[in-house]
Image (cartoon, rainbow, N blue to C red; front, side, top):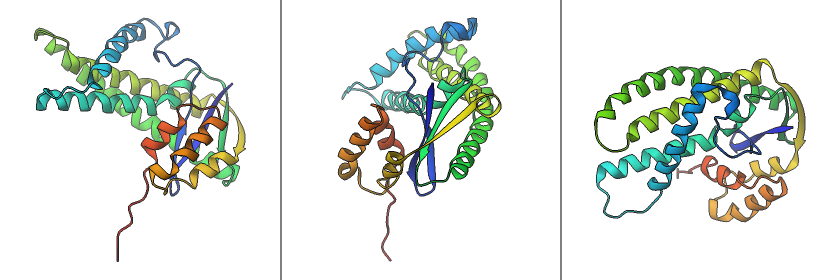
Length: 227
C-alpha cells in the first residue's frame, strides 16, 4: 500500500511526501499513447538535467540561466512525486505527525489537495499552450531545450492534477500517527548543518532514503531579525 506522509516544514506548514517503489519515469505504458510520447520526452529531459548539473566554467550567461531553469524544474518534479504516485491508487495510508490530532492532520491534507487540484489544473492549461508555442523553435538547429522544459512542466502539472483529483474523490484513506514526523517538525528552525545527522537518522528509521534531501529543500529555518 502506498504511504503519503504529512511532513512538517515550518510553523504550521506542511508538505505531502511519498517515495513510490518505482522511481522511473512518471509516465508508464498504462497511461496511454500521448503519455508514452511524453515518456520519450522525459528521457531526453533527464539528459538535459544531467548536462545542467555539470560544472562548465566557460558557460555564458544564457547557458547558465538555461541550466538554472532546468535544475529548478527537476526540483519541482521531485517535490510532486506524492501527487504523481497517488493518481492510480484506491487505498492509501496517510501518515501524520503524532503531535497533531487526526482531524487536524486530515484538514491540512484535504486543504493542500484542493489547492493542488486548482493550481495544477490551471498550469496544465498554461504550459500546454506554451509547449505548443515552443514547437516553433524546432526550426532552429540543436536540441529544443525550451520544448523539453515546457513539455516536462506540462506532464508534471497534469499528473499532479490527476493525483490531487484522485486523492480527493476516490481514494480510501487509512491513517497512522508517527512520532518521528513530530520530531522532524521540531528541527525545522534548526540550522541545516546542525540538524543534518538527526534528519538522516529519522529518514533511515522511516525507510525513506530521499526524505532528508526533500526536507533540506523545503524546511528553511526562519530568519530572525533584531529589534
